[in-house]
Image (cartoon, rainbow, N blue to C red; front, side):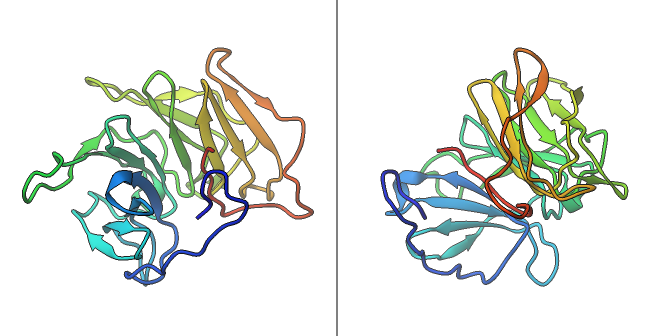
Length: 229
């Protein structure tokens, strides 16, 4: 973990649930632990899973929660403003689901999930984020044997349905993605070719713009995560 203002990463205790990959981590309940807590969603252990674990970062203890509605690995996930989360794609194909946080300190309360409308494409290795207007955007991935640059977004209120966003300049899978100030920034990942490029989607302009510099590495960066500082 890299703390604000720190000059180096510190190693945290290992996960009590064991090794896992292709999972998504959503920060929750930062005030309830010395180092914070995250929900660890889905992923691969010995096989793909729909498990959800609440991980205390100070101890590594992983407490099982209610299972996702679908098995997922290498999928899009985002934290919602009300402390819930949303996820879509991966091994889950076109499916999407949204979960609400239990009432704080309610005895025996559990996370509750509901199915959302299906995406237009099954997307394995996609990334996702919340747009400034409250829509959930899912970008890129590997769909029906082909890497894709296509993107789509879902409004979360009422009877919303997925609508297309302009495609990225490059096809991407398992790449860095972050939303800030009405923009989506993506970088790296795999595709028809490994990617060193980066680009930004401007919500006001409604189009993708290439960033002027590639990732600062001699080789490509793929199968990577990201967070916004």
